[in-house]
Length: 195
Image (cartoon, rainbow, N blue to C red; front, side):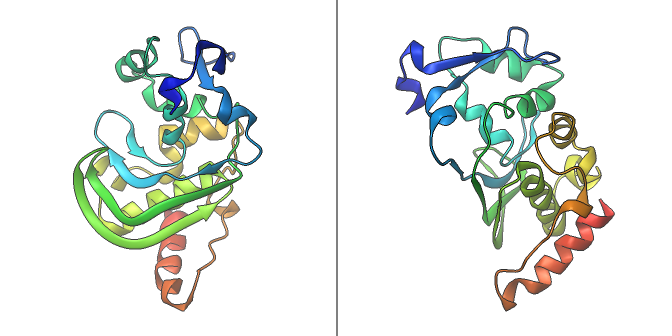
């Protein structure tokens, strides 16, 4: 429980070009673990984040109490860029995005649910989130996702600027887990290619 960490277990970062007014702190266990498994859910976000997947999960490693970070994040016009900016100090070894049931509108706690029956796994946060966005487009989602090209989403664009992973759909290799998932895999590949 990161909320119970002592002051000395929060490491401060203030990277150049960041939209965080005075930088931010990250929980030491995330930075020093031998192996980091990231397990976000596939869902939309109604409070300015647009979607919450692997990049947005990083907000959970910043302290919620005793610092102004959540207020700064939620009041900033650069919220989606700030989400991406939390990510450079660490890199998950494995990301497993749970899309068995997804939120296609609303979120993060309540929203329109759709049973997609998928998991998306990878090692690249940008790639995983891009495929997740393709899955939301496939399922039918809110205009902020449906009508915006995947790689034009601010979280992804800023993550690309920061060098966090792939730079476009041509860098993504989708591999179906079994025969039953070949059709959705082909559909997601088409959506990725078209934006």
